[in-house]
Length: 79
Image (tube, rainbow, N blue to C red; front, side, top):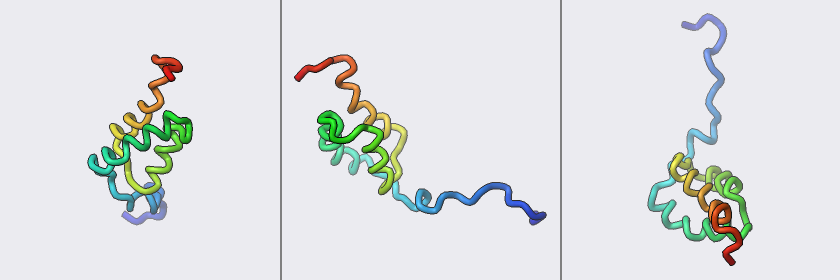
């Protein structure tokens, strides 16, 4: 029914076209990303933003990246 108003705004163009990051791609990059986060080079959120500009990340992948920061929560400054 075309009565005048659109039901919803159009979807964002870039996001819809991004390919999903495969588990293999994630596993291949995880060790390096963990080092970046743990060294303080990037925050988990910044890393997620960077990766999400190229691929769609699953909730599990996002959670795994967030967990890279958790080493300091319980372990303190282990050195």
